[in-house]
Each structure stands twice: as C-alpha cells, then as structure tokens.
Amino acid sequence: MGRPSRSPEVPDGAQSGCAGTATRGLASGSASPSSQSQRGLDCFIFFLADVQTGFGPFVAVYLTTQKWTQVEIGLILSIGGIVGLIGQMPGGAIIDAARSERMVAGLAVATIGASALAYAAWPIFPVIALAAIVHAAASCVLGPAIAAISLGLVGPNMIGERLGRNARFASLGNGAAAAVMGGVGYLISSRAVFVVSFAFAIATVLSLARIRDREIDPEQAHGAIVRSRPDPEATSVLHLLRQHSLIVFAGAILLLQLANAAMLPIMAGVVTAHSSQDAPALIAACIIVPQAIVALISPTVGRKAGTWGRRPLLLIGFAALAIRGLLFAVVRDPFLLVTVQVLDGITAAVFGVMIPLIIADIAFGSGHFNLAQGIVGTATGIGASLSTALAGYVGDSFGNGTAFFGLAAIAALGMIVIWFLMPETRRAAVQ
Image (cartoon, rainbow, N blue to C red):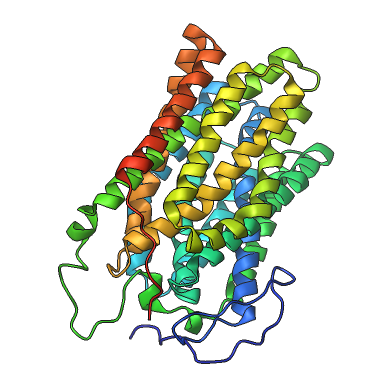
C-alpha cells in the first residue's frame, strides 16, 4: 500500500531554520507541515550542500597531491559529468515512481557518504572512478527528491516561498562548507576533506529523519492531483513532453547555462593574469559574494513569484547575467570584478527558485513533476558542458573580452526567448 495522506496535526508555530524559521500554512484548508518537518528539510538542504562541496574543486586538489596526472584527473571529472548528464531524466523518473521520496534521498546520501570514504581510503583509479560514477548517479535523484519533498510538504500554493527558503539554506551550506573544508584542507590535509564530507553525510541523514513521512502528500510530491475519474491523457508522459512551455523553458535554461557556466572560470584567468598574488583571495570572494546574495534575497524571490508572476523574474535573472558579461568584458580592476559578482548572486537566486517552481507549474496534475525536472536538468547539463568549451575557444582565438561579449549576447537571447515565447505559468491558488 502507498503512504497515507497528510496528517491533520496542527503546527506548533515554533520558529524554524536549523535553529528556526516561521512555519507557513497551506492554502485551501489543508494542514500545514509541522515546524519539525520544516526545520528538518532546512537542515537536510544545508548539510547536503556541505556534503556536495567536498566533491567540487577539492577533488582535483586531492588527486594532484596523490601524484595523479592531469589526464587522469580530467578523466575522472569527465566520467562524473557524463553520468550526471545522462542520469537526469532517469533520476526524476525514479522519484516519480518512489513510494517514499525520503527513503530514496536517504539512500542517495548514504551512497555519497560511502563514495567520500572511498576517495579518502583508496585513491587508486578503479576505486575513484567507481566512486565518481556512484556519486554522480546518486546526485541525480537528490535535486528532484528535495523539490518533491518540498512540494509534498507545503503544496502548490506555498511552493514558491518554500523554494526560496531551500535556496537560502543551500547557499548558507555552500558557504559554510567552503570555509570548513578549506580550513581542514589547509590545516590537516586534502584527504581529510572527504572524511569531513562523510561526517556531513551522517548529519544530512539525521536531518532527513526529522521530516515526518506522513506529512509528505504523495500526490502533491509527484505533481499529481486527486481525481475521481483519472484522465489518462493528462497524466501521460507524452502529454508532458508535448507541453510548449516545458520545451521553451528547457531551451531557455540551456541558454542560461551556455551563457553562465564559463563566466567565472574565464574571469578567474583574467584576475590571475592581472594580480596573481591576490588571485586566490579574489576568486574566493567571487564565490562567496554571490552565495551571500542568494541567501539574502532567495525568500523574497519566492514571495514575489506569487505576486509578480514568473516571467518578470526570469527577465531580471537573464538581464543581470547579460549585464555581468558586458561588465566583465570592459572592467579591468580585479577588485571591481568582485563587485560585479553581485549580479551573479541575483541570477543564481532567481533561477534557484524559478527552475523548480516553473517546472511545478508546468507539470501540475501530470504526476510527472520529477521527470520534468530531469528534462530541464539535462538541458542544464548540456548548456554548461558546451559553455566552457565554446567560450574557451573564442577566448583563445579572439580574446577574453570577445568571449564575455559573446556570453552576454547569449544571455540576451535568453531574454528574447522568455519575452516572446515563454508563457506565464503562475496558476490561481489550488482549492
């Protein structure tokens, strides 16, 4: 049998966050999730960001200390990237088919924790390659799982604010993990970073356990609605794939990543060329500043999505990205470049909330919310993969300024797509 419907308990009204944020009720008379479940999801997202940070740039640093060649390191990173790309849609389909999103998420986190231990204990190619594959595959279900748990907890009427809150805690987690792991890597060793990742994985699973499974509405979590007479056409995968708004939005997100993914790497090269001594601190600041902006404004983005609609915010996000590219092309002062990164925070906050929110709008009633996330996730991966190669070629051939102008033009094309082709997806409150 499936999971029971949401428990009718009354929320306790406590403050939430890992130490507390206000619980928000559902519209249409449904019971609100308890503050325990809200706090559990906050902390789950925070600690999961910590876990995933360990598998970022620290992988290359660690494997370099183990005398790996750049070819071997590049191969490991490529393996993870390829698995992550092709696993997006299957990962979403797994969450849609799951009886318990919480159980799938817990197994995925445990798998990533085991991968972290493998990195630390056996830095030989077959083990690291297997760990990279397993980590990438497990990560493919975590994004859809978080969105599904969020939607199942609060419902479609309050999902915008919940996604804003998710983005805030993910950003705080990324910032905290970068500081902790950077300190551990400096004071102890780069190997110890993966032991810390494993410890964070334990905290992540414990946080997940605080989310009450009975409060996650299984129909809402998959983007379905309860019907007395199910409509086979509305709930078919083919119907979802024919949605004009999904196709346009996936294309817009591909353009977003095509414009965005290469900007920071190219800018890091520019900073290093102009101020090699200050480059590490400046690049760190370029990462921290956007995270702070995301943590600050993401909840506001979630609220404004309910009053302004989705399209104005998408236009703001693309505009910030286009302006950032133009400024990178003309600004030469390394310290001013850090200030320009405020625009990256605006774009990240907008799309961190808007991507799952618009997918929830489009997939509403289909029962395939998480598969739709996988489709857009695939577009994200394709755009990011092409961005660095394309911008790198243009930069080498015509100069970094031209590369930045080109990336800004792609962002402007994304604005045009949203303005002329993307319909407004905001729905009236669900009764």
